Length: 573
Image 1 (tube, helix red, strand yellow):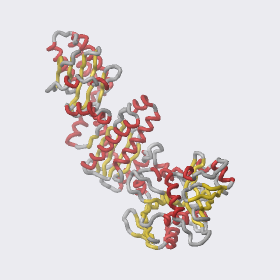
Image 2 (cartoon, one colour):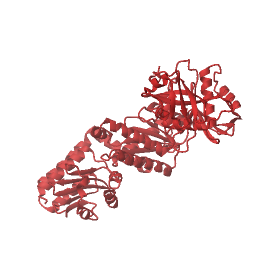
Image 3 (tube, one colour):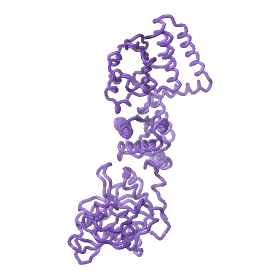
Image 4 (tube, helix red, strand yellow):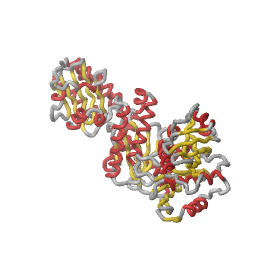
């Protein structure tokens, strides 16, 4: 038995008005609510918000033609920590009074139920299961297929019930199924006419009926269930098996299977985006694993908001996500990747103002770039690697004329690393720089040392400011002295850490933190920077103009050491 169904509900009855205010109840109801006096309590406290509103609507419009005629309504009733799905049998006893009895429907599918209500991937579910929708209009039901929109049935309520029973092979002799179907039809007829509904069979033993949703931010309303063959062992939870428990996205196995089928089997043109949360380990270490989980769920929600019905998404690693878009046009892809990047940056900053969480993305398209799933994934992964090297918080859409050369360079560097050549060349360069600093002589030689540093670090410029914040020396692309004016502002150093330096792999992160600082860097085309304040006086800035560049931690340490050596060796003050 599921933990959700551990507490059974039976022999409960009470009287209620149309506003769900309880007037009286039997002893079983008092025990269930754990209240000695139930009069005056509002039932909405024990229902979900959607169920409460639907039940009010149901009671307000319940006008039986025959005295003591009953009607049924399906809703979840809160029992301590659990929500138990029940059938409410209602009889009208006065102008504004109703007698209600409750019977538990004994569902074993509460997790799926909750996911279908809350998940903004509902449209994705419709694409991957047998799905249909129908229109209820003035006692007429019209059923259509969501795949091809063909009409498969038109008829009245009784004919619709018979169609339903035949189409889904409902056991007419099994009273639980019949009660669920009757309650569902009663709920539908009590909602306004002209409304559209989806019914979704997620496996052979579960059917849910929903109002169609107008947007990704509006929840659907579940108006009915049919759980086939309750006396049989509970159906396996297909939703839980295919979805990540934390984020609600597809898990790695499910998203991979769908992608392989779509690309290798059906040959459907599409685009693949691999997304990685930048510095996620550091985020966990700084703010804790609970915050890390909130980051992942926020990232997932931003992805869902950005892609809407244009694709599907899955979590394929700890902080890595895969998106499969039904789009291949570059402008469309850029719009979605920009929305993902901006959404993550703004939403997570609002959760924890002291944090700055960003993401990097690699994009490849099928069949434009590759011919199968494996090569498409590898290509998107390589583009993600480029995005990381460019300073993170960006996306790279693969273009052979731009990126094949980068792939070749990366492969050559890997070979150099394997042979030891890369480390040896780097050691020679560092030795020459440190030797030149040790043999200091003049300001002109300082400029030469700075130029060697620019070349070795692969950055755009180095600027050295004295204690009065005047430019003392510079090297690289120094067309203009753009910092002196900014340094006069009292809050310039407000973003420096307690160790007196500021490190930004991508200055775009400031967009959600400080517009003034963000605009300063944008106007001066600074994409990455490391600014070091030595002895509380001398400022040395290592800048990268567009595109951005990631500073590996070894390089950051090296630049911090060099900054201190330069100040002490050349007596810059």
